[in-house]
Image (cartoon, rainbow, N blue to C red; front, side):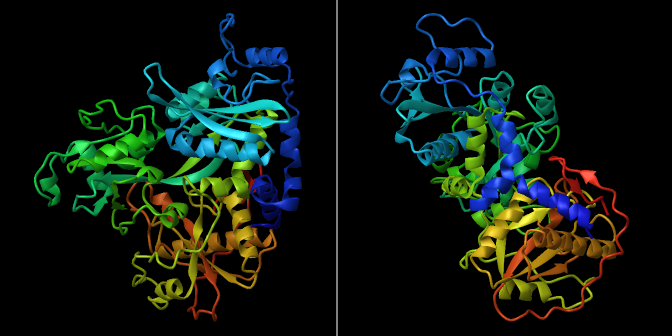
Length: 550
């Protein structure tokens, strides 16, 4: 159980994420806002703006007729050129998954929320007239031209741009690596809540031509295909034909995540299709080419499936799941991932305000149009939970209890996940607590049931206690935010969503949320949690106290 002091500290942590709430919650951001506003704001004059940019971005002197790094080039001035300050409000670089659609749409919505008029987006072209994954989003604000820049050449390029101060925001479709964190240490702690911002979720879809009879694959089969161990469709029971591989390029965070989740450490991807032997920079082109190739298979972010067909994927003994909004938002889909915006510890005020907008309810409505936003909703009635629900012989109660729960209640599409052998929530949990609180305002009479689960490390009875402790920890965290009428249940290490013998077994440590609107569901006796040990406070990424491991 969580001690009172730990609950209070978790409440403080949650307040740091209250940008997603509306109205009075904004006051909770005062410490963060003060820190952001303490950074000197660039002046409006062109000369001073140029000097501020030159100070931020080391480089050779700017020659006559050239623009300094981070400033508006003549062909970028897409609105009337009067009283122009000369610098971008925000410069974003990195992931094509984020930068091709989400970032430009967030930029447009943010400018409109500020009262800007004549908001427009222009895509840059190369000297041959081909479209580049780069955008300038501009508008008129208080008589001045203001603009944001987006460069979407891949996650790796954004890390380098943030390090060299050529970007304010690094768009990443994979979490920061140890090597990247070390390289960016002078800019900030990329794993702290001040620098790492989760803007949405995505599923990496494994795609084939719509003419293919293939419907599901295991992660092991996908690995065999992309490492070349399986090179002909006949090995999978399909008509003979060579397997043509399509993949993103090596700068891509999508590819990095795919290699981590599917191929594993040290594995090398087999040679790709002759169309793009070095991989694709653009996800839409990749998807179009797979859709037109009966022997092709590739992977893209869920938003880029297009005319191709996405396969259901299973992990070990867990059932195959298709990439849907629900399976991705709960992070139960085996190839789900988080999408990140990384900033310096103390970004410029405009950058901080853009981040706050992206995480707000309004920003998440924009995110929902291109990726999977973070605002929880009940599972759509048309989407059936196909996971096996009968509990094992080790369960001391009715083995159909979880089946009955799923039938009589609606699951919210958000899950809380935990650190190893602990009731310590991970870094997405604090904002999700507020998002659940907001969702419940629309159904104030509803009751919640928090269903806790464990992985299979350790014995069954210990996992029963730990699964219930996790549900209780979320209940108390919600109670600290004023959410009551919550029941808990611990389901031991039942109903896994990942292979318990695989690299992602930790994903089975979770709490699922069910909305009860009818009569109370009859549940049998539940395993009781162990007596709590004296908790040793431990700091999380944001410096708030969390309970010690149990």
